[in-house]
Length: 70
Image (cartoon, rainbow, N blue to C red; front, side, top):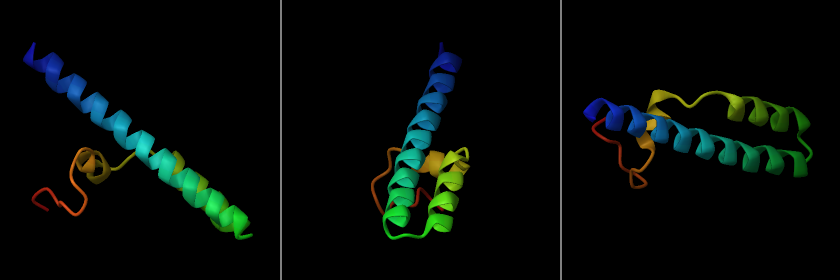
């Protein structure tokens, strides 16, 4: 049961980080597109499509400005 909880928690944190990264990338790409910078819009889309980094996953659920011991 403990393994299930730990594994499920990690999966949920990954999904939350993935969703945040996708949404942030969408906003950035749209902003760049509106400003006419198509190259930056394309780069923002590529960056948003990447899997979240371990730091981005750890940041899920933390208060803004909290570094989690880093």
